[in-house]
Image 1 (cartoon, helix red, strand yellow):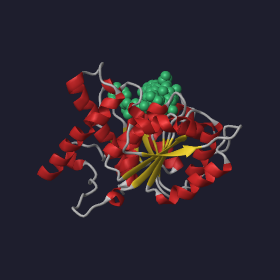
Image 2 (tube, rainbow, N blue to C red):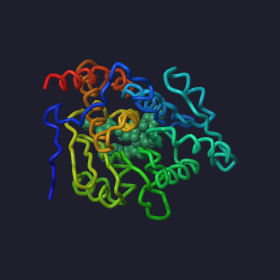
Image 3 (cartoon, rainbow, N blue to C red):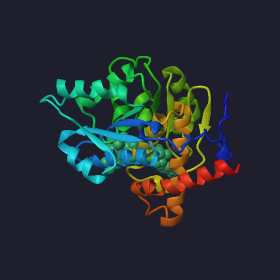
Image 4 (cartoon, rainbow, N blue to C red):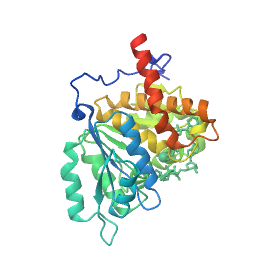
Length: 298
Ligand SMILES: NC(=O)C1=CN([C@@H]2O[C@H](COP(=O)(O)OP(=O)(O)OC[C@H]3O[C@@H](n4cnc5c(N)ncnc54)[C@H](O)[C@@H]3O)[C@@H](O)[C@H]2O)[C@@H](O)CC1
Ligand SMILES: Nc1ncnc2c1ncn2[C@@H]1O[C@H](COP(=O)(O)OP(=O)(O)O)[C@@H](O)[C@H]1O
Ligand SMILES: [Mg+2]
C-alpha cells in the first residue's frame, strides 16, 4: 500500500527551518564533518563542503587524504580541513584514525563518501562509523559502495543514518537491477529503509525520501542536474541540515527540496545544458530566499 502522505504541495508543507535568533552564534547552527575527496576527485569534497556552508552550518570540516588537503583547502577559505594519513596498505595510520575518531563526538552530523574512491580506508571507516557513530551519519557515493561491498550483513546502526544513493549505487546495495529499481522505486525504497532502519533518499527525477513508513516524492529539480557533482552538493546540504538539528527525515526532505529548487533557478537563468554542479551552490541563496519568503507569508 503506497503511503504518499508527505508529498510537498506547498512550501509550508516543508519541515520547519532552523530559526536564527539575534543572539545566535556559530555553535547554534551545527558543526559538521564531511569525509570526502581523493586524488582526482577533490571536487566532490569541495562541492559538498561548500554546500554545507550554504546550507547554513556554523562550522564545516572536510577530512580528506593529506595528499590532497592543500588542494581542497585552497578552493574555499570558509571550511576547515583535517588531514587523513595513510599507511602502505592504504589504511589510515593508527594516529590518523584515532585523531579522527576522538573528534567525532564534537560534530553534530558526519558524512562519508563523496569522491573518496573505493579504497581500504574508506571501507574500514564507513563500516565503523555506520555501526558505531551515535550522531547522524550521511552515507553517499563511495561510502555506499563500501556498504555494498561489506562481507557480512549491515548491523543495526547506533544512530540516525541517511543513505543517498542514485539507482546505480542502490542497485549495488540491494543486488536488484537498475531496471527493476527504476520500475518500482517506491517499493524498493520503502522495503530497504524499513529493513535497514535508515532514511533512504533515492535520487533521480522525483527523488524519494522514506523512513520505511512515511514517503515523500520531491517535486523540485530538473534534467539540467544530470551533471557530475550535483549529488555531492546534495550530500553537503543534507549533512548541514541534519547538523542544524532537523530530524533526519526532515533534513533529507528539505535538503532534496532546496537542492532541486536551486537547480530549477539555475536552469531558468543558465539553461539545463549549460548548468553545472557548482551553479547549485551559487543558486542556493536564491532557493533559501524563496523558501524563507514563503514560510513567513503563508
Ligand atoms: N568532481 C568530482 O570530484 C566528482 C566526483 N564524483 C565521485 O565519483 C565517484 C563515482 O560516482 P559516480 O556516480 O560518478 O559513478 P557510479 O559508477 O557510482 O555511478 C554512475 C552509474 O550509475 C548509474 N546511474 C546513476 N544515476 C542513474 C539513474 N538516475 N538512472 C539509472 N542509472 C543511473 C549509471 O549506470 C551510471 O553510469 C563518487 O565518489 C562520486 O562522489 C562524482 O560525484 C562526479 C564529480
Ligand atoms: N533528470 C533529473 N531530474 C531531476 N534531478 C536529477 C535528474 N538527473 C539527476 N538529478 C539529480 O542530480 C543528482 C545526481 O546525483 P549523483 O548521481 O550522485 O551525482 P554525482 O555523484 O555526480 O554528484 C541527484 O540529486 C539527482 O536527483
Ligand atoms: Mg553521487
